[in-house]
Length: 125
Image (cartoon, rainbow, N blue to C red; front, side):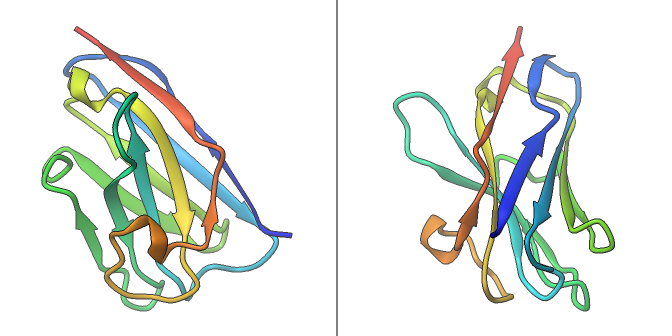
């Protein structure tokens, strides 16, 4: 049974940093794209960042995350991370990690097959 467990959310200050982790279990995802999405109250779930398979390791980001967020993965630990710097109040949302069953440039929620339960990130001014 595949399970994704996020951690590292919480309260951050504007201009500060938070690091999210997502540990996957049940199978290895080293060959597949892993990503982060977020959903603010009253808004649709939106793409934040993704990283492709271990052998390519390409990363891509939403415009809102470029230059501030960094996604990385540790395949030995089956874990993906999201380092968030220069936080803004508009980053406040529930953050979800997700894993696809293929590799590639995947930015839509329907591209992903497995989801974590989400972790709340709140950024104060």
